[in-house]
Amino acid sequence: MRKDLVPGEQVIVTTRPQPRQLAGPAAAFIAAPAAAAFASAWISRGEATRLVPGISAEWSPWLVTGCVLAAAWIWLGYCLPRFLRWQATRYTLTSRRIVARYGMLRRRDQQVNLAAVRDVTLRQSVLQRILRSGNIFLETGYHGSIAIQDVPEAARFRDFVLDAIDGLPRDGEPWMDETLDDTGRVLPWELREGGQDER
Image 1 (tube, rainbow, N blue to C red):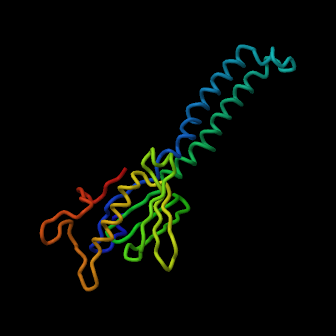
Image 2: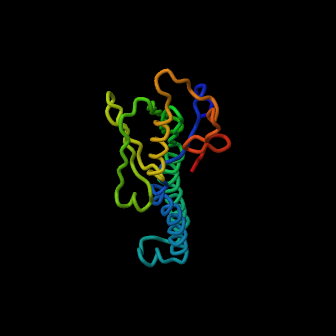
Image 3: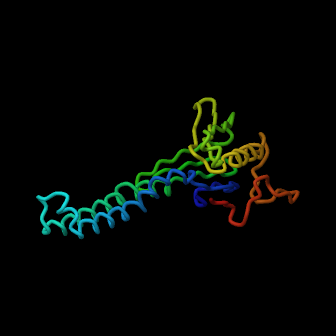
């Protein structure tokens, strides 16, 4: 992101969506090999032959291989894509804009200039309130509303957005090029070394 900044622009915070969406893949990641190991041991003891008389002992290696392949399919077809989708989604707030990036191979970028934002709305479900995440809607007037889904620490992120909007220069004022303004006062979002606070 740093190479995409224009002169005077600073990264305030970079984050990913709330990781609760990884709960299902994480459970499947643990359960799939456990179930495959249990099924393989059950088949190796000859239980499958007793349960279905038509299955001979010669089928056991193929059935065990099927269990292993099923676990691998769950890992590669369900867990990995969802993890990569979460990993590749980033929300970046700078002193001038919000950038939402989605995808690794097929990338989609969504950018909103803070100067165009007319209203910032935070909406939370009950679960999101418990986890302190939420959906942030940016009203831009002429483009309608733009949503940033499942932002962690949503109230704090919204406050950062409002502080950044308040810090925009008024007509005729120059952009600040440094972390500190000419009075030595730290900007509202308290930039750290490197100008990025990632969660």
